[in-house]
Length: 203
Ligand code: T5A
Image (tube, rainbow, N blue to C red; front, side, top):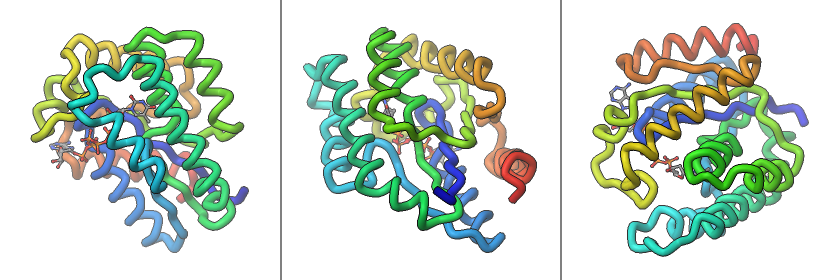
């Protein structure tokens, strides 16, 4: 495996897509090859699972079904795309990875231990080298979103719990997870991320 694996995490509307676009451009400018993926999704099966998970009409989706669908999309992505990508590219970037499951289903939905063990099992040994957590106050992140999906429509207290969970996870994993204030203007966020990448990954 030659690629460095970067994951970007954050609450709804925290700017993950904007930041990933910036990182991709920066790395390419420096002459690196880059593969970009998103979770759930980036495979034909994964994109279908994503539609089920985010569809507002699926009000009756149970918490355990939700967990299994996220894990299914992840194993499909790993086996179909990521394993190959790790030997093809210099950098692989993923918009969310297993930290999202730990925080959304494990912590905020309260599934706890079952999430910890299943996440470990179905990540098939893959661990990000570096994770950026974009920290935004839920009210502000949600206000940036025009049309809310099934998860974004959850209560403000659910989103506040997510933030608490992410900050705690970052505190427990200081070498891997870096917290970036995502309430600043995008150009300032990009500047911060560039300096983190240059320091951590010697870009
Ligand atoms: N999920 C996922 C789980 O529950 N468990 C899991 O295991 C996994 C993998 C996936 C959903 O699934 C959940 C989490 C999610 O609910 P997603 O990853 O959130 O969906 O996908 P998107 O809907 O594409 O992401 P968001 O809509 O949340 O947006 P982004 O990518 O965070 O933000 P972005 O860059 O598109 O920006 C949104 C808007 O805000 C503006 C942008 O210009 C854009 O208009 N913006 C800013 N404006 C001002 N200042 C800033 N700093 C700004 N940053 C962005």
